[in-house]
Picture (tube, rainbow, N blue to C red):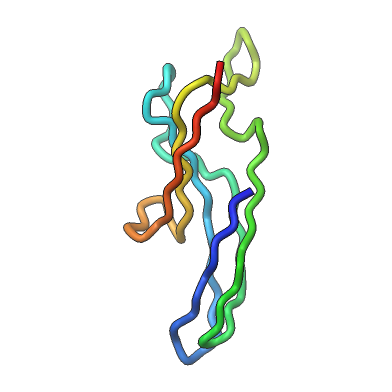
Length: 99
């Protein structure tokens, strides 16, 4: 589970869609550069903060192989949380899947 804090620095209530992407830099197969794995829309009152939780399941990083079915390959993964995949202010965290 990823938890992020969203702050509304404006003087009006606002909505934000927090998105969680996973990328696999050294994948053995061709994959999308950023795979959307979860999102949540939240309303943030003016001047307030809201904690947002997005659940990522163990099978979410998998890709489909015609011979083996769904495969979670071992290696390094990067989780990116922001309001879009190319958000320059997005939060990033790396994790490793062991063999």
